[in-house]
Length: 225
Length: 258
Image (cartoon, rainbow over all chains, first blue to last red; front, side, top):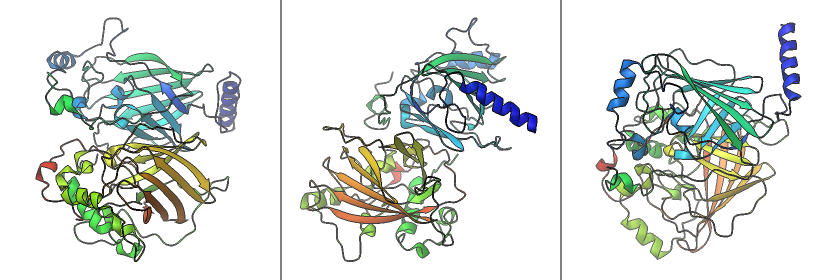
């Protein structure tokens, strides 16, 4: 135990010499409004594209966003699509949780960061069940328990209810987060794949109100073809 | 996931339940509303907790704190709502099926949806996270800024907050005129200005005293008070209004208190 405490203290001390801003208790300071890059296609930059299983390939081939895109009906984007939006997100670090607020769809996710693991039985939801912990200057968010109503990205890469998503937010000294998202889904992909992005802190930005349902004529008047 | 296929029905049941919400004893378990009632227990009296810096601690999961069925229920004894004839005409013409909340639009202020909510504190900002109320959030600036001169009208308006002793004071302008204050359809205009005063009276009770000022709909400012109650074991769950929202086509009749 003493060794562990020492290691933790050493890690915190080491982390604090790097110029990365920290909260008083040593956690990396990830609070703020972040500009996140629009990622409509998560296969971009991955050599060989996404490692589809035959189920995944067939599902993707059959998908046509022009026929039906659930987000056009103001249904939740789902976790991966929220962090893919062109609109900013805000991170709020509570004492025992992390809140991710997205301007897109006015969505938010409250994630416990109190040492708990996923519940043994998880009911499938649009945004899944998430738990968070810190590894040095990195916030790690682990998510399972997704339903199959959402897509990974705008162009419609599929996932199944077996999806497991790991997000890593590493605070850098230069007002950026090195963001990594790993998707593991043995039903849709033969192996996990990872996207890497940079989030930029925007001290003078604030989230604006977003209402999908207000005057959503694209769908109600049948403009989506 | 809470998929409330009977969303409106449940809302109405809860609203009925909340009609006597300023007297906690009224929140028991009437038949038909047990699911919600059982999650909002009457807590034994205990003082409101404080943060290490001495400020009142508003953390936790809250339920209520604004009108659901009828704004009038928040009036002090003997008070009435000073409606202008034009506003009364609008209210009397409203049909329940057009209630924005039933159509998955935000409640605006001070209406609450009969679902839990919580505060999230960020540097310079305070958020209110709503489980229901289309699972959206509201932003309150706590950094001392003033309202913009000409705010873009929105559902939650432009909110600035500050502390007066143990009371959180939230001043909001810049509303659109689209939301209703309650099931009855009490209206407002873009001139609406609200001041909410939140005080944690005891461990289980957060009092919200709201001054409504809207010269476009009411002849003078008036005050309503609603209590939010703590759900000690509550959590904010996923809530999707838009999923399978089959009720709207079944809602009939003029807007009214359920």
